[in-house]
Length: 134
Image 1 (spheres, rainbow, N blue to C red):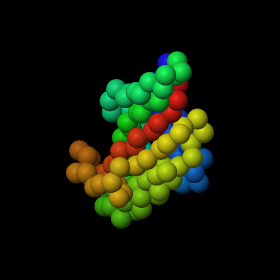
Image 2 (image 1 turned 90 degrees about the horizontal axis):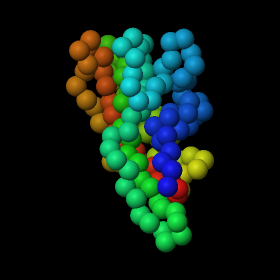
Image 3 (image 1 turned 90 degrees about the vertical axis):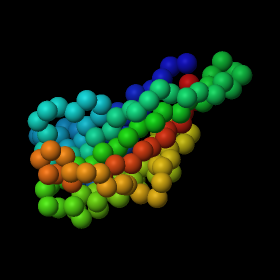
Image 4 (image 1 turned 135 degrees about the vertical axis):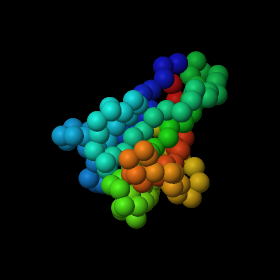
């Protein structure tokens, strides 16, 4: 079985969702994995949070489930705007038909507010489970 680069593929899906996020803008507003130390205030990050779970299908293939956390960070004192972006990301990914995946499901009923980061930037996060056959 060959695992996929799930965090990257979900980020690229978000990039095409019309949310004004980009992996190629200068500076980017959309990241996967390790985030550079210098990023804009408003950005979205996806990172895998654990090992993949699998279910053997008896055909030499398996159904793999990967867990990814999406963190949305915003401009200081703009918590409502940050929440709106986080909800838009959640809606774009929840039950999305991401090519190559049999299921993409966001946990809960929406993003959860996290404490501000060390620079006072508001943050929201949610978890995504993405299943695919490999």
